[in-house]
Image (cartoon, rainbow, N blue to C red; front, side):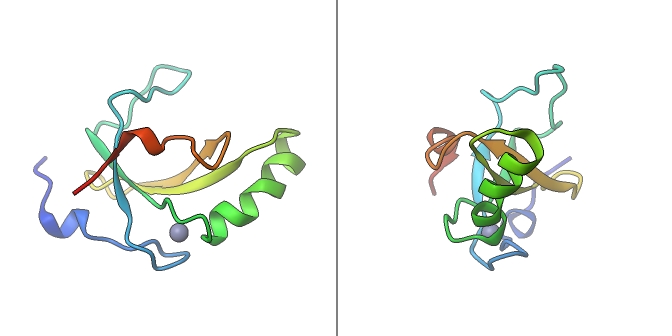
Amino acid sequence: MKLTHEALDRECPHCKEKLKKYSVSSFNFSDGLGFGTPLLLVCFNDECKIFKDGWSAMFDNYGKTGSMRYWYNPVDGDEGVLPVGSREAMRGDIIEE
Ligand SMILES: [Zn+2]
């Protein structure tokens, strides 16, 4: 499927920050399944509700130190959250414009 400019120009529904393009090429799920897209749109706003609330949610639910970031798949419109181990996690794969 072709990625349109409109599909890549979205804001986070939780904090209204513009989502950043994130290269999934280096990212793999532990079960080996991919996203079916070369990139995801991810909210890297450290003030985002998902990220701020994620710290306690991760600890309460999984007993782990970490948080979550919101993502949107521009190919199929799917969305969800990804666990991150730290504030800097995943930032190396942001596609800067
Ligand atoms: Zn956000």
